[in-house]
Length: 105
Image: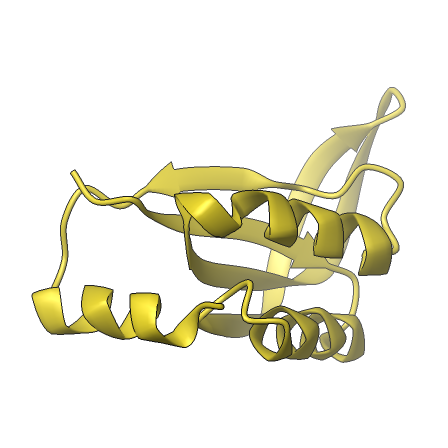
């Protein structure tokens, strides 16, 4: 098992997604953030079923940078309740995992 994490969050616009991704990488809290636009979401919010088009961010980081990612999302995210799901990376390309380490502060 590695110490790498894949953190997922969604935003309401590509502009917000880009702002968050840029900040995470510039602050060395994430090695890479993929932005997947045009994600169609259906969810329950405050008792009502809602639909929205969102952007999905795939944030590549490590356990030691998790709090920095959380803090940045709290600072920059516009949602009242931002999605924040963590997937532990069990294994991966050794070269890529080393690159993540080298890219983080």
